[in-house]
Length: 194
Ligand SMILES: CC(C)(COP(=O)(O)OP(=O)(O)OC[C@H]1O[C@@H](n2cnc3c(N)ncnc32)[C@H](O)[C@@H]1OP(=O)(O)O)[C@@H](O)C(=O)NCCC(=O)NCCS
Image (cartoon, rainbow, N blue to C red; front, side):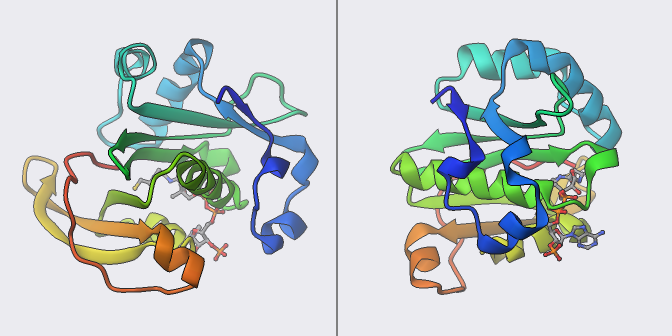
């Protein structure tokens, strides 16, 4: 998969109303996107990934998928990006971020929903992530998208000073419209950084 048009996805109806759908595109991240992404990282995360880290993800990690969201009115400008690692039938979301000036406009939700649709279309059955327990914005985004809280990893961030909330989304539950309480499950060594 190299290029995704949002309209190929079953994006939730309320998003269709709130966004000029035709003008947004979600596609695979390229090496050319990385300098911009590294700049956004520094703006939004206390422990940003470097350009080298992203390059390595794109060039060396066959399990990784990274997407960017752009708008045709702003050619070449990355508005949001996110990634996941495919591990057996689980997708481990490593990061998701929206350019600060573009936050609060449903772009994070749109990108996350595209990642979810990609995961189900590529035979994944579960998605998981970690998020700082005080990142209410992100936690709200994940809950709105169907993720449920599954446990706490104490001292996961900042050299043991901050806890991580572990969340899961199970395809079966989502398809049945169930918001089930889940177990911790396997894996979880990734983190969604802040
Ligand atoms: C978290 C983040 C990805 C959300 O993206 P966004 O485009 O700003 O969010 P959206 O406009 O798509 O909103 C999606 C949901 O997030 C929640 N949300 C968004 N802004 C919020 C705010 N200021 N306060 C509380 N919840 C908020 C809401 O539940 C919202 O759904 P709603 O509009 O139906 O109520 C974005 O703010 C960001 O990049 N933050 C910095 C990086 C980060 O923390 N990434 C996550 C790491 S775990």
